[in-house]
Length: 190
Image 1 (cartoon, rainbow, N blue to C red):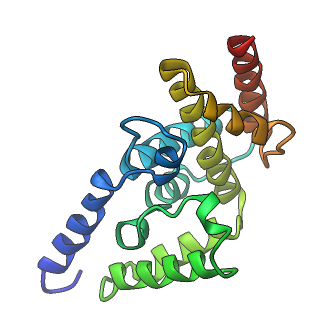
Image 2 (tube, rainbow, N blue to C red; image 1 turned 45 degrees about the vertical axis):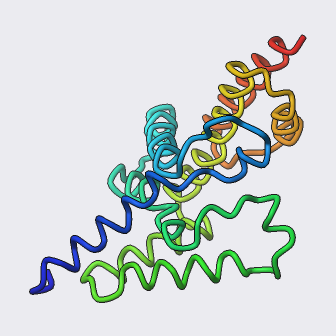
Image 3 (tube, helix red, strand yellow; image 1 turned 180 degrees about the vertical axis):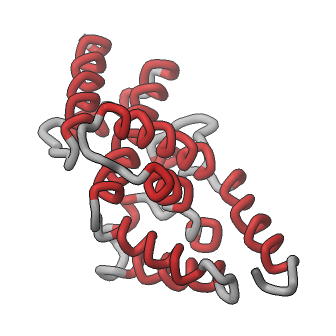
């Protein structure tokens, strides 16, 4: 542990920014009062736990939850750049910005190399936990789109449903849950 506890406090205050960082893609889809990044990270962690329980694969729950909780930490510096906006950026720009931001956020902390390696594994889907958390991130997005569509009637969210038709997840549990939700969604819209 560094001698100066204020560096740890700085990390916690930086992470707290995610509680007020809106998920920008929902604004672009005209969702009133969209969730923030922290809420999405919590949702991803819960989905990851459920997928882990549904899985026959032996998983390291600590590694899994660490990835889920930390997967958007860099967005406390670079904000939430939605997938649709990413198409207008140079290839790799978002990933590069997030890598630099994470490095700055973790600078001088003893666990920085471990957390950086963990996030690198997540980004490149190395290992069963990373694949599952990536699926959890995508499935949580689909679940949230369905919730917004059902509660607010925003038909623009049907674009999300269309985009997920035929999408292949890395884990059977995520595939099963996504298919079930898509069927429920189809029944909802008639």
